[in-house]
Image (cartoon, rainbow, N blue to C red; front, top):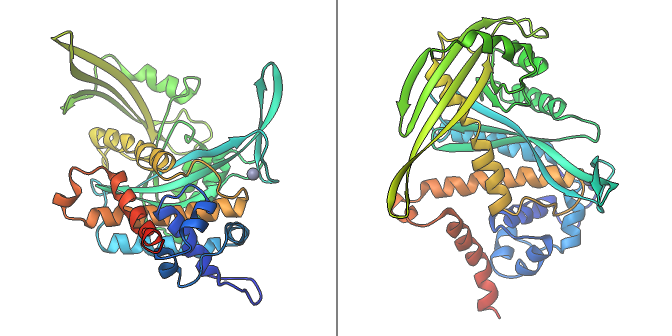
Length: 381
Ligand SMILES: [Zn+2]
């Protein structure tokens, strides 16, 4: 990693390693890292004394962000080479989505995004940071590849475009289909992807759009395909060559899936059956000759993995729902280090013998890592 300081007292890599350890041990703050990392495991790993929390915070503002991205790039290549990240039904999938890290009325920086919130009848300015994240998904594994922080006047689509541009430039073969939620049926994104020979498959839910209105008119009462997978019955409609998206020159395909899941519950000793029906509509540039209706529906649902296996896990189990240090470069650098730690942790879990892994929830393995990190503190006390 590059270090742009002249004659630094402590090399930048010590700080990067300290922050990686912060994530791997899932510590809640830089102070916790400072106090718990002074002896034992922390010192061995850093090959240096643990810097103090203020020093770590200051250096995190000038950490080498492109260098961290390059580390993730090397991890991505290794994961593909070792067949950990594999295609799904012959396609490499990626998911893009926005996420708000934290919001505050008091703490801000010049790069904060702002919004007005009514509090007790009065408008108050709330400051927040939002990021767009790029996740690669394959059977049994996912890899957080890159992140883009929204600038103060960015919308999510603009930041997403920057992020996709960078990924296409750095790793042109890392995906062929990009999945996204209802915010991403944007002509500028679809055009960029088509220019690079990639496809988009995103949720279409804005009922005001001509495309959705036209597609609804063409769906008809009888589904084009019906099948059952597990407890869910799928009824699907699939229409190609729609040209009612004015700002996009290409024709698109719209796939609709009405899914009825049957669940058996016990209430007052009686077995009752509950049915739940959900409807999904996706717009895609994928031709049906390349991807069948059922596979397109399966891919559409893979989008949820960014919510479940990334954002929820990072917020609930990794303390990623706050700023360790409120500064735009620090936020980006820390999240890139979080992606490295997340991938290392899941590679470690994947390599455990199944008999050891089974029966223990994931977070217990995180506790075991933390205890190994903290143990030397006890023995030297
Ligand atoms: Zn800020």
